[in-house]
Length: 111
Image (cartoon, rainbow, N blue to C red; front, side, top):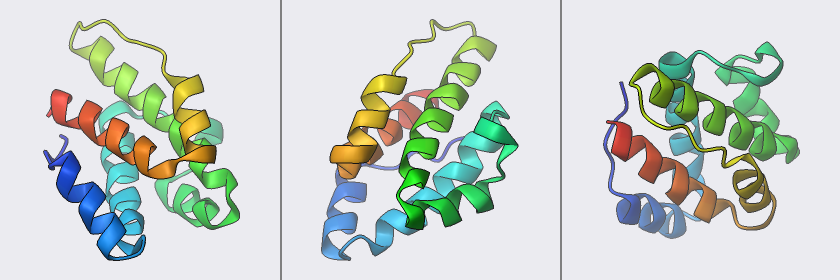
């Protein structure tokens, strides 16, 4: 379902590659989250969401979809879902690398 990746490695690779690895991470994570949770804001495919990353609005859409899909997986497993949309959206706008770290940590916990 989810690929277990080291949060530190993801952050270091993002910094070392000047953000190129973050694009790879977004691409893979969008597909994993969509396949696991099946939810998408406005029924946007992961490919369209990825393209929207370059228009700055994509980070916000990813943040909302990531929270929805993580909570959907938690509910499927009988775990308590926590609404982190506001935190995720703020991080997407201000500090995207922290959003990557938080989402990857959630995905690791569910892997």
